[in-house]
Image (cartoon, one colour):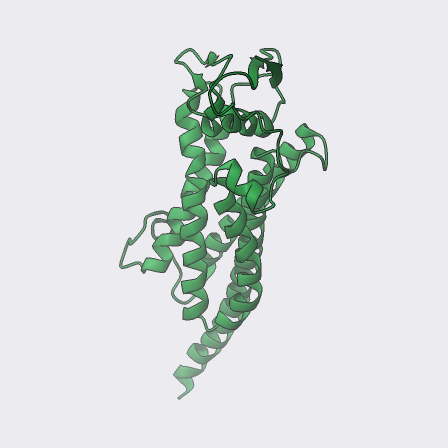
Length: 279
């Protein structure tokens, strides 16, 4: 009986310790969830030009980076906390490698989401040194990272008995995030019909193809930073070539006017200028 006393004391102390560690992991996970959703929402608002009236362009981009840094910090803290457990501690390999040592699916999803986000953040500073369009495609994987991380959060809440909290708070945050993310890929005319964009001047061609208005496109090379957002919005009009020069159609056909206006609106540097002319 006496030999069991030290073991009972150790278990009690370890229980208090592990309870504190798990509490830290829980709080950091919730903060990571909230800031991750905020990062995605704010990034979409900046990329589409919807947020340009709120603040300066550089301030907007910096605030997006601050939110992303906070999300990554809280996510990393959440993962690191599990290595501090006294009972059932995670090894670094188990955190870094999905399904290592019999890892669960929900753990693998969290690992995958965090590692994709870290890769995007690390390569963000190298986008001028690597082929930019490849980095842009990598950056677009953030939508995938957020999706798998959200699934990880919901599975974790179910396993830990916290589904009620995530159902109320998490769903409240997730609904606008998903709505904005979906709107990011909708055509501009759909957004106008939904009331999410103000209608632009028509620039519609005459039924017989004669008369009407035409559109001239020009790009200020001093302002243009080759972010490639215009190409994502209007791939038929704008194209980044291998040496990072931007080629574009100076006089697009009428059926591409809406894409041209979407690209001009989304350009973070306001480098694209559109002029109407009468034909």
